[in-house]
Length: 314
Image (cartoon, rainbow, N blue to C red; front, side):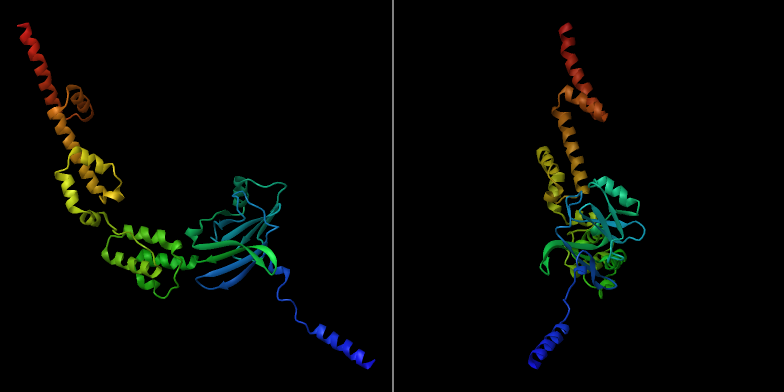
């Protein structure tokens, strides 16, 4: 009997010493802060697939920005209930409302505008989002992962604006897709070699490809000078029309050179009209351009037409 009592007591002790489960249901359907640094913030959430319904954009999520605080917010639809999670406090929905039927996209925008939210441009804000189906602890879920690089992007933009690559030397690399449009635009607009070199150093650090040339004057000096000289001085009308109808990327001719070639083509067309143009063609051209040379040629042709008539009358 004492042996059986000892076995029962041992079982009770073992049962009481068991560790609790490693996760609870409260970890689902809410955002967790993975890391929270000064420059980069990382959030992750697992929402059960059965609960999430499609939004008007035919996706599971929509992203909004607070117009005053510029914080990111994620909108989800769980059956007929809409929930908006603001990343300033992502542990619970900041806004929650129910509707008897799904809202249209415009109605949803109007509803959230009352709370101070507008659609977010993730690239402009400096935010990367990943959404994928995941099985979390045996539960089928949608994983939503958000990486907020907004503060880091502001520091990179300051270095790009000032043209100082030293400002980013100790910063973490930012994903290229979040900064590449602004960096390329600044490189094209740069007017000094010093700033262009600084932007090139920043681009190399982030592995971003920049345009080959950054200034129209530089392009005009470096884009096939001998070929452009041929078209400007010796090309025929048909050759000029062909080169002008071809895109700038293929011809490597910039806007300044293209304007000069158009003037050259216009001059050749006028010379051809003056030598071989019919009276009707000359009259049409004169009505458009009011060129005195065309008027003189028209008068010459009219006089030639009038001479045979006068001779027949005599």
